[in-house]
Image (tube, rainbow, N blue to C red):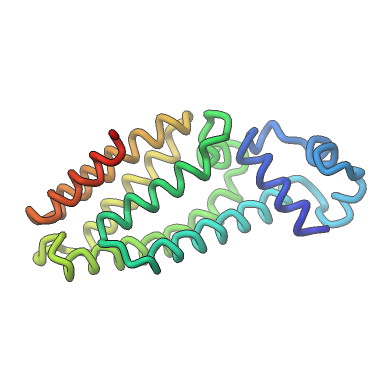
Length: 199
């Protein structure tokens, strides 16, 4: 039951917003009493913590699945971007990350510290893979570029209220980041990925 509550709460929080969803809403959606929810979670904040942890795990499991498909480094980044777009496409247009930071800053900070470590490793692996594949320049200072990219991405998500606007700017950031690192072979692959989005 606890897992079912977390799953339904996560779905509602992402769809309708962390602030607007109440314990009554979750109970109503699940056809259970609010008392049943409080049996497992002493308050909404604890449920939000559990829900964000579950979403975080799901995101990284999907990312691992994409990475295991062994796309080239640039294609891999576009597949990961697509996964985020699909994950948040049925939501209200308020960025979940922006909401979390605004209304539940402590939970946001806890998630952020874990996320920075995992994203940094993911960006580093992708950069090194791209260099090996000849898509990124071999004189690349990987650590600096990793820091540039996560600073860009986290800044966009923390400061953009609209989810659709955040996704549009993230695509620009991905193109900007890729062009800065790419060899001519990498630019050709980037153009191919951008054409697929426009098609």
